[in-house]
Image 1 (cartoon, one colour):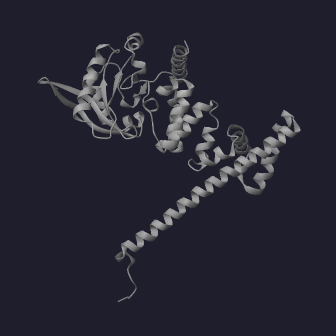
Image 2 (cartoon, helix red, strand yellow):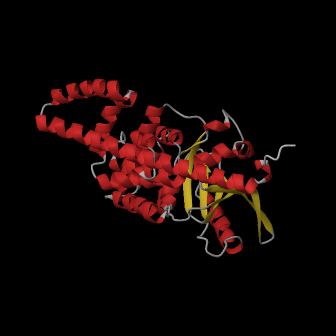
Length: 345
C-alpha cells in the first residue's frame, strides 16, 4: 500500500491554495490590462504629437501604416494599423491621463476600445458608468449600444446638468437614479408575440422568458410575484408583476396594458403604490415605483397628468416587434429633442 497522501482527503488545504492561485491570476490579468491600456494611450499620444509637430494631414495618413509595418514585424499583430488608429483615438478622446487611469482600473481594453468611438461625451460617460455599475461584459456593452440604451433611458431626456450629476453620483456613491434605470420603449421582441394577443398572453410570455425580460429591464431587478393580490375595502386587486430593484432599494410594481395609455391607469397605479408603501415596504427602503407598460403612449394625457416628471409613476411603451433601426433612432432622437425643447422653454 502506498503511503503517498491523498490530497482529496484535505479539501480545505487544496481549496485554499486554488483560491490563492485564482486570486493572484485575476490580479495579474487586471494589472497587465491596466498597464497595456496606459501603454496604448502613450503610443497614441506620441503619434498625435508627431503628426501635430509636422502639421500635415497627409503625413498622419502615411505615418500610421509605416509604423504598423515596423511594429508588427517586431511585436506581432497587436500593433497592426487598426490598433494603432485605436491608440490615437484613445489619446484624442480621453486626454486626461488621470481619468484614463481610473477608467482602465475598472474596464478592460476591449471595453475602452468600444467606448472611445462614441463621439458624444455624455453618452460615452453613461456607458462607462453603467458598464462599471452593472459589470457588463464587452458583448453586453456592444448589445446595449446597438439597442440605443442611452436614447431609451429616461435620463437622455433630462437637462445636461441632471445627466452629469446623476452619473457623478453613480460613479462616486454607486447610487443609481430612477432616470438611469427606467427605459422607453422596452424591447420585448424576444417574447415572440405577433398580431393579436391578450394581457394574459403577454404576462405568461414574460414569465416564460423571465431572464430575458430582466436583462432588458436591468441587472438589478429581482422578480418577486405575479398577480400579487391586494385587498382593499373587501375588494381584491392584482398587481401584474412585482419586482425589487436592489440599487434603488424600492419595490417596482409593473402594470401591463395592451392598448394606448389611459388617464385612469394613473389612479389604479397610485392605489397599488400606497398599499405597497403601507403593507410591504421595509425599513430603510425607498417608496415603491410603478411602471405602466403600454403598447402605445398617449403624450398629451401623460403631459396633462405631469407624469413625465413623476418620481413614483413611470409610463413606457413596449415593442414586441422592432422597426428598422434607422426609423427607431429617428423616433428616439425626436423624443429627446421635444423633451429638450420643453426644458428650455
